[in-house]
Amino acid sequence: MSSPSPTVTVLMVLDLAQRVGDEALTRIRHDLLPWIRHLDGFRGARWLVSDDRGTGVVLVEFGSPEAAAGLVTQAAAQRREPARSWNVALVVLLDEAGVVGAPPDLPRPRRGSRQQTSQLDA
View 1 (cartoon, helix red, strand yellow):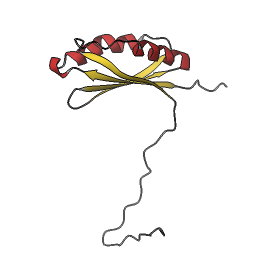
View 2 (tube, one colour; view 1 turned 90 degrees about the vertical axis):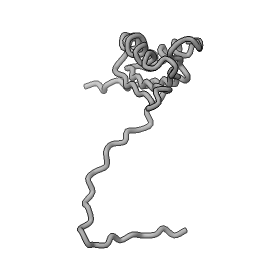
View 3 (cartoon, one colour; view 1 turned 30 degrees about the vertical axis):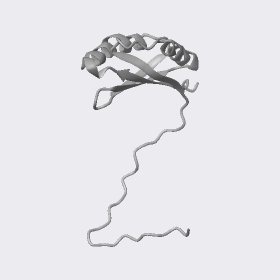
């Protein structure tokens, strides 16, 4: 049985033009994200936006380093266009450093009991 190929992630940070309101979000949803979905090796993506709608973050997962590098190359080649509703501020190929899971449920102290604490020697 072969092991699954590793997932390679690309981080894209986007500057969104707040002057145009939600136009930047609409353009990204209708233009950028569908284009990314059709790239060879695409596995999935997560799209995040700041509360003030000034920054967007796209985490894109690919099945190979070559496929991910293709997006990095194409995104890095984008010229900054002040008139555009969004621009690529940063694009980086990331290696997985680990996975953090949810902590296990810890027993809660009983009501009225004191918790013991320890101090580390300085």
